[in-house]
Length: 47
Image 1 (cartoon, helix red, strand yellow):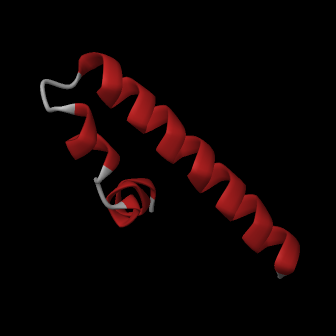
Image 2 (cartoon, rainbow, N blue to C red):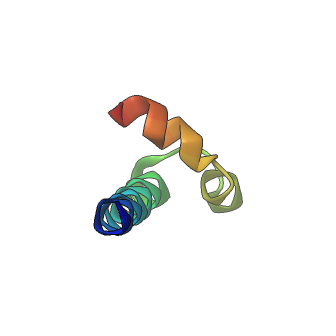
């Protein structure tokens, strides 16, 4: 379903952005490292 795929993409994008923002503020790792984290890592955490 196209609408469901669009919804999932939007949510995953929002989750990725939120996680990146949190990592940016609280993570001890450098910012470039947090940007390079695979998005599949977040998907596995959600599913």
